[in-house]
Each structure stands twice: as C-alpha cells, then as structure tokens.
Amino acid sequence: MEAPLPEIAVVVAAPEGKWEPAVHSLLRQSPLPPAAITVVTPDDPPPDPQLHFIRCASETAAERCVEAARAARTPYVAFLHGRDEALPDWLHHLARAAQDDAGLVQCGTLRLRADALVEGITLAPRLDGAAYAVRRDLLHTRDHRAAWVMVPRLLVRRRTDDTAATASAALAVGTGLVRDTRLAPSTHAPSTDVSVHRGAPDLVSVVIPVRDGALTLPAQLRALATQTYTAPWEVLVVDNGSTDSTREVAEKARPDLPGLRIVDAHERPGESYARNRGIASAHGDFIAFCDADDVADPGWLAALAAAAPDVDLIGGSLDSSVLSPMYADEQPAPMTEQTDFLPFARGANCAAWTDVLTTIGGWDESYRGGGEDMDLSWRAHLCGYRVGYVHDARMHYRLRAELSGLARQKWNYGRSGARLYAAYRHAGFERRDNRTVLMNWSWLLLHSSDLARSPSLRRRWIRYGARLSGFLAGSTEQGVRYL
Image (cartoon, rainbow, N blue to C red; front, side, top):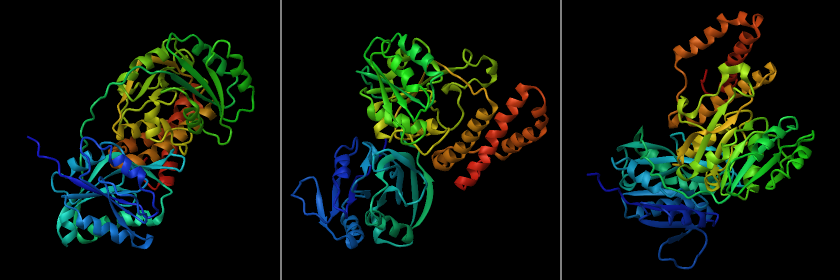
C-alpha cells in the first residue's frame, strides 16, 4: 500500500501586487489541493476564507516569505511567483517526489513572454527559475543531509518579465536551505499520465505557413480541396512576407475552399512565427499544420480528426516516394521508429488541440530552420500531454533537391540538435557516446572522395557533413558538447 502523500502549503510571492493568476491555478489543483495558501503582497485585499494575506513592502517581501514558510503547519512548503500558473497536477507531482523525505523538490518551468508565447524552458537542477518545495523542519536546522530531487516535468508557466523583487522573494527560502543543508541531487520519475477522452473536434483549422510559395502552393490547396473529411473545417494560408504571387494563388483557391482565409505574418520571417499567427487567427478547437510545398493525401485530415479524441498532440506520416522518388534513402522515419529522447510530430504533418497549444506556449519562434517541432512535442510530453501518431494521416513530402538548400537544412538541424540537448538533457535527452562520435567523423573523412564521385554519393556526404558541422556550431553557441 502506497504511503499517503505529504500535505503542502503554498506561499505566493507577489511584491508587485499581482497574485490572482497563481491563486487561481492553485484552486484548480488536483488530485492534491494545497493545504493552505499564503499571499505575500503590498495589497490589502478583502477577506477570503481560502487565503491568508501577509502585507509587505517590496524590500521586505523575501523576509515575509521566510516567515510564512516557518509558520506553516505542513511537512512541506512550496513557492510560486504571483503571476505563475501551476498546471493542475503540480502539487501532486511535488508530493510524490517528496515521499522519501526529500529536503528540496523542484520541477521545470515554461518561460513565457509577455504575449504568453514560449521563450524557453528551465529544467536544470538549480533554483534560479525553478518552482520548488522545501521540507519545513529543515528551515529550523543547519548542516543536515537531505535529497535535492528534480521532477523532470514542465509543471509551471512563468512570465519572464517578472520583477527582480518577485524572484528574490520566491527564492529566499530555497536559497537559505541550499546554504544551510547538505543536499544530494537525484531525479524522480514522474507518474504515468491518465488519458482523458475528448470528443470529436467542433471545427478543425488547417494552418499553412508560406513564404514565396507560389509554385508549390497550388498543388497543396488542390489536395486540401479533395479531402474526404466532412465535418466543419477551415484553411488559413499564413503569408510570411511573400514577394511573389502567393496571395493571388491563395485567392484563386477560394471557390474550391470556401473556408479559406489569408493571414498576414510579414513582420518577422520564420515558420514558427507564421504558425503562431495562424493559431491566434484560427477559429477551430483543433489545429492541423502542413507545409505549402507538400501534398496532403485525400484522407489526411479525416485521419487526424479521427484520432483527436484520444490524444493531445498528434503526428502523421511523411511519404517522399511521390514528390521525391529519387531520394528513397532519405525517407523520414515514422514516430514509431524515432530514437531521439521522446517521439515527436514533424511540423510538416501534425495537429493539436488549441487549448494544448495555448498552454504550452505555442511554437518557439527562436528556433530557426529546424528543431521547433521536436521542441513543441517534447514540451507537450513534459507537461503531461499525450503525444500520438497516426500512420494513415499521410502527407506527400518534398525533399530538398538543390545541394545548397540541403546543406543549409542539415546544418540548421545540427545546430538545433545541440540546442535541444542543452535544453532537455536534464530530462533525459542523451548525447551520442564517444564511440559513435568518432565513427561519424571518421566516416566523413574516409568518404571525402565521394564529393568527386557520383551525384548520389556527393549528396549523401553533404547531408552528413552539414549536419555534423551544425553539431559543432551549435555546441559552440550553446556551450555544450554535442558532437
């Protein structure tokens, strides 16, 4: 029989006076609600039986947070910023990790910009940027030994524009505990998520980011016009600053796609930026993504929508045999055969519920040229969402034909691989072992003569060489070793 979970009181540090987001998220905690909620704020709100308020000035907020923690009557005390939003099972995961009398338990945070889009994640086992809980009895002692447990999950949404006073107040107790206690790091494997069945989508939105796609977009729009899906849906062509006739091409498709809309996204280049603009403009509760240079199979959308009730984010299959038959050895692997950390849905063929995309902060716009789809899927995984795959949602995929474009793509993939390792290594993403690294670079040197041989061998060498070079560049940029 499993031991009962320890009770956790929560202190909300809000020296700038904004505490409602954190409190609202705490009142939705399940299956473990907070034992008590104390808000440290300069305000004097009306009485609330569910809350206890402690008045503070900005310069005394940290001291008041320490006093609130010491006065708690629970085995553990957790801390949030006032504008944080804890996901519904945050306290449950902290309590499970604390069952072995851990001294400090922390989880990962989603860092959000002012517009609620993702800026990045914090998963490293350090207090800076962390949401955490401490064992209260350790606040009255010194030089004890205890475990510092990391829960490798993204369980708190945190604004990156919080004031220094807020961060200082929320970290005060943890900083003192780290100073006074000998903490040994460890990791707690999170519990398995329980699937929740959703209904069928009310409206599906198909988002197509495009920049100068006048030559290939017509085929994709014709393919969408012949979809077998019969429930309500719409198409959003998101123009990312095209200078060709992309908009005219989209306009001509309106008779065959009555639900088509053109969304302007010229302010910044980038597929992730265009996709986020599409999400913001979509009317659907379920959003599918595809690219302007591919061609959807007739049953593509129907297959995604049929799988939607049982998943939160889903990927479909990519088939290059129709649009790029000469590059059979470059066929993208299906999700069921991926070996990188956690399975991920490729950006050229994926879909998710709108509320899921909103919760995890949308697509990370700082990824350019690759890696953004892995990041999106892995964030969804680590927030506890179900990421699935449906083979029948087939997209005919176009591979790069020009060697310059292929090299640039693979180099960007390599750079993003190093960045993903820097972000997700504390959640279990492992780099290649030394033997594999040596074999990869040795192969590249031994086959350098392929550049002067057949076109297929030259293409293969460029694919591998560009990616390995990207690993080097990304490692330098991120300050990690990912070769």
